Image 1 (spheres, rainbow, N blue to C red):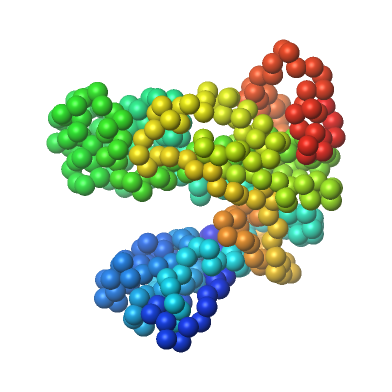
Image 2: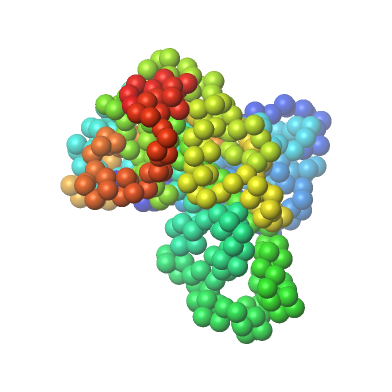
Length: 428
């Protein structure tokens, strides 16, 4: 299976609603882009369109490796721009800058390449159950670039009070997949770690100078050095670990509500997650109303089955509630935020199967669907190709057993049923 072989294989159209106000101060523009992230596109608007960056607002970030259409507002200006990979057109006016709350989600048209005919058939067979009962609203690999680049979860190190390790992960952990000059710099910093004057000479620029200048003056203050890491980096790594634990808690909770024969395995860069083929109507109804927020130490934790699952994940990671306050770093703070446990695609089109002109002897599948804001289209694709939870090698089963949380000896044989029966457990 191959996604995003070419940008045209992954098309995204933002579904946005705004109040049309003919005399409004904010001009709504459609922004069409290819091979550009949203921040890169906005930089071109500033440079080639002569637009003040502070006058631009948008509802959401769109993928770089895709062809995307979204909306931006520009205060008191209507701008037209035609560049090789960007097109901007005014389409209306409104009374305020647009924001994420106005987004209904995104419409996707995706081409999956490199399929064997049986795989294409599986996709087609899997679609009705997905449309009928949805899928867990997991975060996908895009959220976990820290794992792809070999840094690990910086936020976990922070919560454990290991500020030096957290700083190393951020600035001195070379990526195994990147090919930029930054990799060489991080390798050098790794070798010179502890010689702060040498690091300060080597790592120049606004992203590094404040960090190593601080360590030259206060060599043991790694928490203070973390505060000098660019805020955007701190926030990204904070959300990554928060999202990871949410995924794990949902997957753990599903063990008690999805029958064995219906369990599916979705593989991600951050580990395997449980989904379902079909879900009993009463359990679907429970998931739809269940409160399953991203964890925040000041929050109430959501519905009881999810709260228990989240607490077990935190316990397994060695994290206590007090750690969030004792080891707080500005910009690396979790707030409780509701996220639905279940998501259903809508406006689902027919699947088109055709020969894949880029992969001899293989076929492609083209499908279209829409998702609410915050849901991952790539997770829908993974669900369509998911195998049985139990279709794994003996080695994989052993690794999964090793990663499972240790159960207290005080728990009886019906402990699992008692812990998860609010979600309708079928079995012990």
